[in-house]
Length: 366
Ligand SMILES: Nc1nc2c(ncn2[C@@H]2O[C@H](COP(=O)(O)OP(=O)(O)OP(=O)(O)O)[C@@H](O)[C@H]2O)c(=O)[nH]1
Image 1 (cartoon, helix red, strand yellow):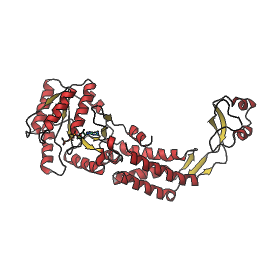
Image 2 (image 1 turned 45 degrees about the vertical axis):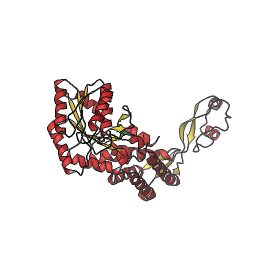
Image 3 (image 1 turned 90 degrees about the vertical axis):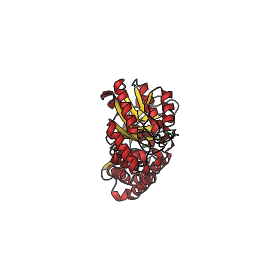
């Protein structure tokens, strides 16, 4: 997952790390630090400590370490040592080229331009100007700046669907929208299974009355998962199917209604008007936009257009298991102002991951 993006972030870390190492100065006064010492046979005179640590023997002498400390080193795990820290103050011109490379790398990864700019700006703010202490690993400083920049753009308006469903008046009605073939039906099935596992009762509305075979496809999923399906004839009015499903849920105390809708291009005026009607008639609690992560910027643009026609509450990105760029996942919440709720990570019913921006950022640097 996200392999290309990981590579690009890795090269940025290296390139800017080199600049930082060149500009870094060693502090005159060493500081005391606990260092790991190999236990057992290692000779006391050649301990393996960091590059920044001057000869351990020297330091022990300098700090007037007690003879007992010297004796203990043979079997101790940790000891005090004097470490010469480094520090750096960067100005904008030092890292201008690297930041330009970062912006290009983000754009090549299909990250939307204003999101790429926001990330670069945040990395710059983090690194430039103030005095930074450096440990032996310069990469850590850069990685932390990148992590917090990406986290910031991804964690807009985080919203917990589980909490919402737990607390809301039942039935909770959720409509899934998006273009053709991006994984709506599969996602609804995964969601139905997940909610059923959480002990909620679920009914699915076969609201895609447009595509031949769509009703049969969702009927197979509903049967496998063991949830009720409300369906009409192919070519029927989707608003009527969804309405019936909600009435059924109210009459039978069903907790959650998941409504499928036909995939449609956001540019198709008639179909978008039909979608507005479905949402108006059934007034859902939540509208979730589904698209595939592999579509990159296109998915983000579509999310924006759907959001204009029928305001969405969040997105689900499918096929992240096949996505090497990560651009849509990073951009979509920032651009729509609505959070990512789940990620589809495979074709199985359990391949639905609740979205957590912290987890996502960890994946980029693992
Ligand atoms: N690898 C992978 N494939 C997925 C994922 N989600 C869905 N798919 C596959 O994508 C294909 C299309 O999925 P559907 O659920 O039929 O898509 P849809 O949006 O309902 O399609 P329409 O009914 O045409 O609108 C199927 O082959 C799914 O198995 C995912 O997270 N990862």
